[in-house]
Length: 616
Image (tube, rainbow, N blue to C red; front, top):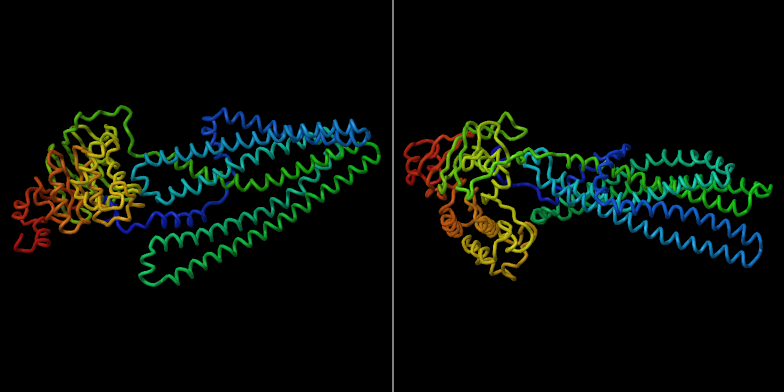
């Protein structure tokens, strides 16, 4: 098949989805820096507002658990000052009972906070996934001409996973530790202004190396991700073409290259680990060195009688809590930055608008659809190639129930005719009409519901044979599906499968032969019972015997339907009511086989090439 500018609906030689996704992940990892600007995360707010009850419950539990944590330090102060200092057993018991009660409240509040925050995060990610996939389904083919499918899949998988990590875990950690830090610092200022001032002086000393060394860690992390993506990309490419690798006995070379990529990724990871370990050691040394100095200074205040031992213990707990909060925030800040970049890319995809969209007030097609098709002086060029028109002044009228064959050399624009008729694209000039209604004024789904397509390489889906047939019409009964399979000459091989029509056919129906997949695709189109049938090399994958049988089935299916047939093998279109010959995006000849051969033009030359001089 030719490329998109040649107008073919299906493209051969396209890499498998696994290899394309792996390759795209490798490429996108290299161009995905973390965003210091976290404003793109605001795009998650509409998803949070949908579940405002959970959000409010999560916020309340966050505040409550933070308050309980701070209250725990006050209870501990009471144990020391009111219990041990007084030496009375009753006072000690009461102090510990208070401490235990606060700890119980903290446990309940923490569990509730975890439940509501995590559930909210999972709900937001689930809604985001559904919204993103539903939006992608509305995008037209023009979008995928400028954006690789692998890039879209990467945003729906890798980027959404980063958002999942943020809202499912990192957001909870960040919010909890931010509240703990703010609450702890505020409480420390109340407990001991002198020690709080000491803390303020120590914070920059601890934070500065963390942020400076963190930059190097982030760079090494990106490098490690790139090397790993290289390994995954090569693995996906090799596995997708495993039969070729084995046919050329290149398993050893493939293993060597993958092993080299894995070792490179391992080396990059070790460098990242080493840098992170060094940063951890420096931060912990500075943090706990500061805590040691803090305790020494506090001890001096206790000795002077300016502070009670319980107050010092409480302040130490608050200081450790604040230091732990700072460390935790440093840990999740990278996740926040990565998620911000991911959300920015996801927002770009959500903001993409299809060029083909229903008009504000769509016109309704006649009921039932008669199937009259009219192309009126249509001019069309694919996006990105405006200088190479696929159709140029193309005009064609097809009467209801008529079978018209489109023939011509590759790149003549035959499949482009079907693409415009299905309204995958709109023409730049002229008009395409169905039963007198300009397709640009109609609802695209209503237009497509009137048509059934069988392409040269019709994709099938995982599931059973029955599932694939019913994909053509969801409400088709089992009897109708079996009748369609019978008409497509597919019943024989389907009933021979282990579970008959209920047999899973695997991803893209790879367990079936090419001819079997094509017959299943034809059955899917026949069960649709659409008034318009579009056949783009529908029998090209069949052997001579099956082609004869399926052609008989298609001849019967064409009866009473408007049919457009694209064929390179002229023998399959000899019985068409009319043969339209296309070249350079326009009609150059039309008529029956005999009339066109007698004219001695392009069709006659094609006929001589296929049938020989005597037959022509």
